[in-house]
Length: 194
Image 1 (cartoon, rainbow, N blue to C red):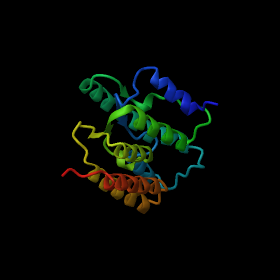
Image 2 (image 1 turned 135 degrees about the vertical axis):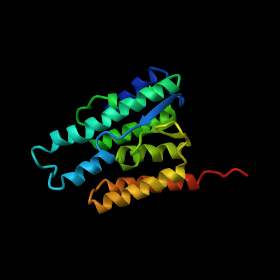
Image 3 (image 1 turned 30 degrees about the vertical axis):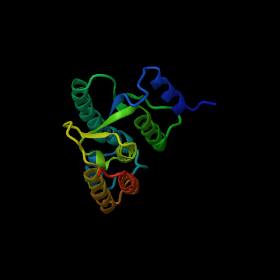
Image 4 (image 1 turned 90 degrees about the vertical axis):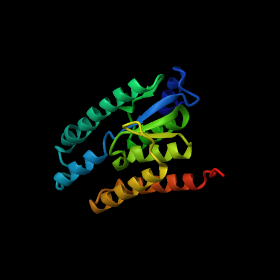
């Protein structure tokens, strides 16, 4: 029986983006640097609060979507072919955040040859996992200005962001630290040129 994730991946293949022919834009949506700033400005606003979801949407998600739209437009102008914009996927009934993380990591692993990381990506759980996936699959890594992103630099950014999230008391720190460790292991296992 096919899951929603399998169906969506199959649908993507209908457009011929398999065999690593796409550019993927990795962008914070529900977390990221704007989330950290928002949580620091609203330390008493807990998830159970009635205004949490609305405030989060306005202060974090909408800011992230606006930033992503600018970067996606720039990437589409620079690259011929398919550019995958994860912000355009509608909510999937029954999916929780880990379902989206797993799906987008599969998309990166199966369809991308290049991943462009929107500034502040290293504060995002989803982007951290996409980074680890891209490093593991030896894909081309670029920052939002389309400059090469060295895996070691990305690992440092993730590690520093994880430390910052720990000091802010945010549980997303664990995901960032695990992604940094996965990327480190992938870099360590990459054969070095002679």
